Length: 423
Image (cartoon, rainbow, N blue to C red; front, side, top):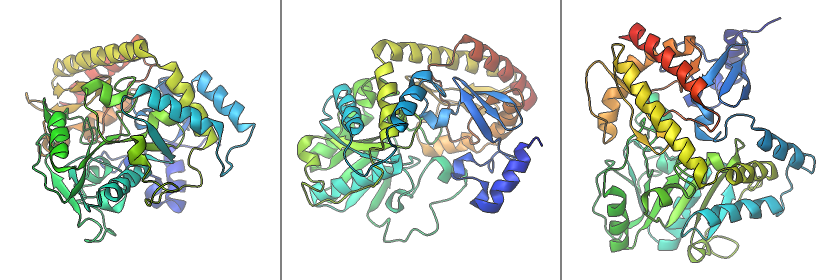
């Protein structure tokens, strides 16, 4: 019997809270029933009903080469035949760490973990341990995973669900977390262990860093002896071969990575100078561990993706994504809606409005556009025409190396029709 998306979602709701294993996958903010994916290939995914979509979710940025890239699949299959986990050192974790430090100036060592949340949580602990200070500062609307201390004024699913923070997080857990507006350099004091920032805010839709913002954070951290942490779970090895450090020319003290470095498998990493990371056990007093850290399948996939992406590849990806952004913005405007599509490298947002508006520079401005109700209608119009975007207005669009003129042309046609139906 052919199963429908609705039938699979009904089954899921019986055994999985809300029917999803991550709130950002739910259709709560856009309404309707999520499609259940059976397979993906390149720029496309196919659901249980046999409908194929041009996919701009791409596992929220993890699939840089597109889904099921033959080289990645071959690397995973080859590695799996030798064993999937050991709880012991492996060659793959060394090779992935080598690939990362070779690409990023100032990054001397990394510790692999199993998710972006775990990477940021561990980086904060490292910063506190190294500085012997307690307080951290983050920015309004930036999402850094679901660890207790960072689930305050978050973007992504936290904002999409309309939650101020999260139930179950005690006042004590967030008592040492300060929040400042994005794109404003705060004045720090000697109680601050670290400033944590998304180099490009990509969890309040897309908000670019203002000129001088990241450099100002670097200078202010240096002034008071605080550490600067770049959360590059989204930007890492996607903005450029060397990530945000190469793209912006600003070097943090600690980097956090995820998504791309696993080639579609669960992985994360945090790193910095050899001196700073010597604070981690077994060398130092900051404890961090993980049975599945450096998983052989994830490291094999990650190395394959990173080796496939040279400097020229990033030029191709960025050029294609930015042309698509310009064309998409124009076609939506020509058909009754106003769209502003900010870009940074190959990253692109999508803000919709009934009349002309400027690109947001902070969370408050982004929230006005994300919550105006237009995305909900536009999302379903696009989905009905075979274009899959994130089911929430606070997320961004991801273009992979597998997206080309065929996919872009189909998307632009669908956007023209969807804009007319939404306006």
